[in-house]
Image (tube, rainbow, N blue to C red):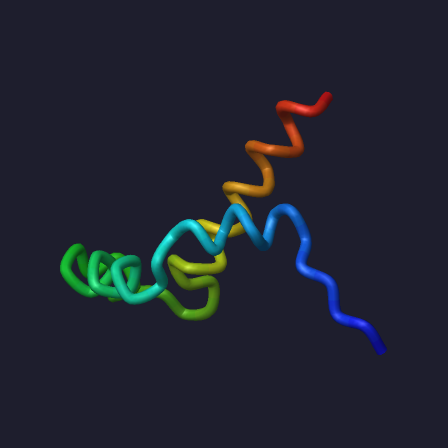
Length: 55
């Protein structure tokens, strides 16, 4: 099976995961999270912004 990178995957790759994780730890945004942590929320909100702009 072939694997293709999506355009959205390319956009997310512009954000360095190590720097993002460092900021999450510094701000302590995942302190009280039980399931939906900061990284997936960031990806979801980014997708929502792109999807809303195409309407």
